[in-house]
Length: 275
Image 1 (spheres, rainbow, N blue to C red):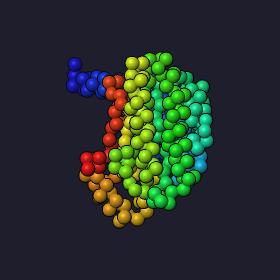
Image 2: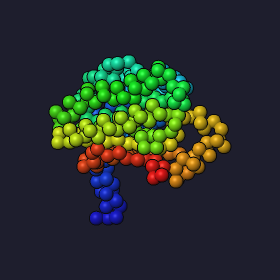
Image 3: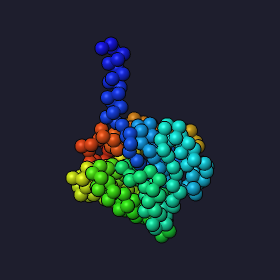
Image 4: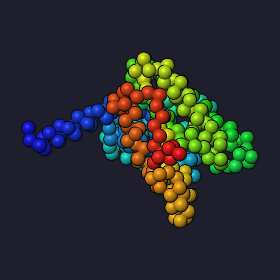
């Protein structure tokens, strides 16, 4: 066999290990930033993908067409794709989101819980409304998603769940106390459930990004000098991560390549979690 033939065969075997061909995935918060990049890499790996989005959030980011743009990009990669409009601030919307995605794609194989909100507010100034809104979107909606998606995964004997956490689980910022506490709660929920469904071929893992340049923190990048200092002190790499740098970890944990990994918390922080 010629060297180039061997290389092509090696590439095929690597691709097979990370293949998501025939898989059906729901990515919440999938219209922008980390969620979008995860949805795109799933499509590139062969999955059909539904993304959940909240139009008000996309509009606040100045990207009212984000969901449709992402669906177009997913279809350009050969995926069957759709956007599910759902406001997780309303009870029952997360469960409905799973039902809509399932009716469009079939039983779900993969669920990525990426949608969340945060208020950068000193603890003594946090309002009841801010607390309740974060509890609903960042935690109760996660419970709904899992209750809706897990039975189908366990019944078919294969599933992947990935919750998107945060460095704030272990190194919380004082202005993100409620957000950090809820990310810790979500992580605890994930590792508890991982034990319950492992025998049914379902893995549940958590991915904890550090400082990532996203739509949510775009305002911090308006002053280049301030942003440079934030990056310098953020982690040993002295730079922020890019949303696309989270996608590879998600693919590992949601494909056959990660079949023996469950209950893990992958710290993608540029080393910030090291202290």
